[in-house]
Image 1 (tube, rainbow, N blue to C red):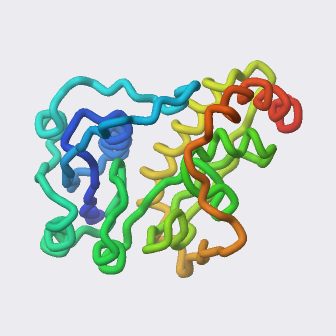
Image 2 (cartoon, rainbow, N blue to C red; image 1 turned 45 degrees about the horizontal axis):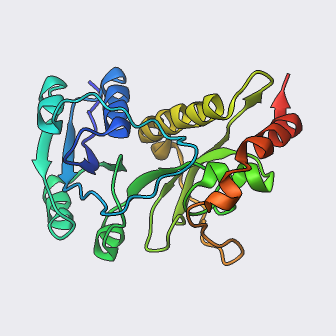
Length: 234
């Protein structure tokens, strides 16, 4: 009988779309030993509102502890200050980020934490990677990696291109990228044991981007049409 790995999932203590999709993927793969560590969700006082929303945001409105119970997965509240010790005690084989802000250095130094980034690292680091890739005319991809103390760096697990088709809209492409993110994050558990080395993604060549200013974002749809003509697959 094949041993079931112990999987820890870091998320928020609020209904969260990406977390729910990751848990669906893990359940579909037959993983049983899964535990969710839920961080407090803090609503920003002045949240940034983009012109074009490109990340799926509508979650099933079930509190996380009940969602996990329905999957027969364990659930535990946590904080940024206590999570390190909780993970040490849990002794997970794999730790996945499904939702979290910046994590303490102590945490990423003591655990191999798997993250997925909506872009090619280190080429498109930082926020709004999809939008910046389109604006700059560079290929869109997804990267799974072990995180470290440097933002959007660490060590490479896998990278995939996101194909673009003639009939794509900006939002259909964005959703395809999101689906690939979920798939790669779940599949990383099977992929990691097949590697003996992981390439460093640390680089001084590419700076991490910030939120796209609206003065640039307002021209995003025109930039997308140019991008599509350049990269579309017939």
